[in-house]
Image (cartoon, rainbow, N blue to C red):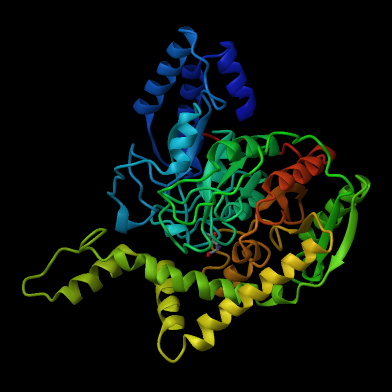
Amino acid sequence: MERRGAHQIAADVASGSISAAAVIDEALSSARGIGRSLNAVLETFDDHAMERARALDAARERGETPGPLAGVPVLVKDNICTSVGRTTCASRMLEHYTSPFDATAVARLEAAGAIVIGKSNLDEFAMGGSGEHSAFGPTKNPWDLSRVPGGSSSGSAAAVAAGIVPMALGSDTGGSVRQPAAFCGVVGLKPTYGLVSRLGLVAFASSLDQIGPITRTVRDAALALRVIAGHDPGDATSSRRHHPDPLEGLDHRVHHLTVGVPRQARGEANRPEAASAFDDALRTFAGLGARIVDLDLPSLDAAIAAYYIVSSAEASSNLARFDGLRYGRRAASRPGESVESLVSRSRTEGLGPEVQRRIMLGTHVLSAGYADAYYANALRVRRLLKNEFDAAFASGCHVIATPTTPGAAFRIGAHDRDPLAMYLEDLYTVPANLAGLPAISLPCGVSTAQGSALPLGLQLIAPAFHDAELLRAARMFESASPHDVLRPPVVPAA
Ligand code: GLN
């Protein structure tokens, strides 16, 4: 299959050299085939998508100018609301939920001509880093079917890597766009907090959540961001700040680029494959004339602890609405049963073990007698971390570089008995969420240390609302790196 980027598809559809209907037909059939083999796709919107594609072709024939994403097939993580199909959050609790509206990010993509072909698999309610916590079964990594694709935007990353779609939406609370992008060898962008509307994103931890695109190239990430970014009166935390067009000047190099490297990024947490890919990445930057400077960000050491306290606290509050009475699936009621018991059984049956663990952890860290020790201290760490990042940027760093993950994709089941080990995998991604900063993961190597070829990611972090500059630095790296377009081995269709 020829793999066109979103840019190319939109240009070809606009010029009439290919029809949107042909593009969408092909994407739907690979979503049903390879998408199913990987368990990356939960639902396809066949009729809706084909209808929109034909309407787009007809409009073009009438002489209307198609949008910047004309005919681009897109998959949407299933915790982002679509008015077509279901929005399950990969949870039994919302198995039959249909949203009456489109999330703002989805509406903006479609207004630009993109066509949502279906919904992608995830860790239940976006809680996880492997894709194994979906109530509908784990997603597989297209590079090695015995390994996880990362999470929680597992289906979105796996589908882009497998060539089903050139663009997918994910959500990133502590790394869920960047980490699966790294494990699957694609590009994942978490925008500045407040740049992309959260309206229609089912809340996990509202002060950390951000929708972001997963694509194969930096240019397509910039294209997606340009379309979905911007103020939305429907989201109280959506920013009104002016933000530059990320496509403008994308190919212009950042002058005198300075790349900061925190001490921890070269630390013992890295497995050998991640350490050597990261060193190579820094050499690539040095070869581009960038200055590499060492940074001391002491609060990074406490970031994981702070993140799991803050995110679980917010999750326990956000998910309280799913009680089977106000929202969500209700357990079959028993005669004479108390409301309390019905709620308890509905939540026990409807929510998976990882979600229950987060709710219990969150309730604990907020409870009387513990809130000061845990929650209040976590907020202090968050503030310190933000200050340390600000100081690093004020000292002249344009971007801060780390590996995206301390190693390549692990085997399905590797962390089954040890949730903490899974949490520790997030050490490089959670700081950007705690500080509200934009961050991107780019392919930076392929390791064969574990038998099969597995991609690795480089993470770049920039100051808040410097998303366009972040993308320029990322584009510089991509253009100088031999890993710009990685392709996993061909996955047989189901
Ligand atoms: N892996 C992290 C967690 O489990 C991140 C999740 C996310 O970004 N949605 O919380």
